[in-house]
Image (cartoon, rainbow, N blue to C red; front, side, top):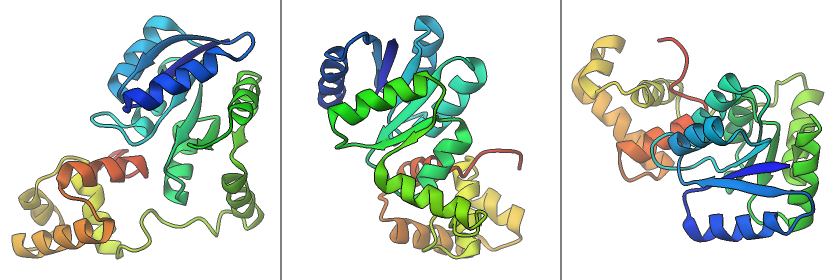
Length: 214
């Protein structure tokens, strides 16, 4: 089983690589520190599985997963992240991930999950699995919109920010004043506890916003 490890924290990535290398019949064929490098390495190294972090600079794990699965359908993506919100889980699965584990998972759980996704199965951490089962049990009605702390208008503006639109461009598109858009953007930053636009974009894209046609 050939594995590509993707995480932007070098020490965690190194430790994970060492742990995976000790598993029987598993070989780590490469590492990547961001989503763009992950997409390139997946095409070049042709791993069986990509172990993917989500919150990374530049191309995030959601977008990288979507591109890898689209370009290389035979590669399975197993998410391993600190993000445990419903928005991140469902965005990852919509992008094509076959598994979702939380950082802190035991080595045995990671090993079982690698074997499972390699066999075409879908796996979740126990805490994640209970929420996914509840979602299916209610026909999807329990799934929250991304960032439920935001108003519908704030979520709409965050989506446009994640698409790369400037405040004036958003104002023109939504027929709002520049000041109103600035106020909404400031409220979004405060509610999401992000420091700047780049961090807000990363959070939004991790949650599946900023994709698809305008």
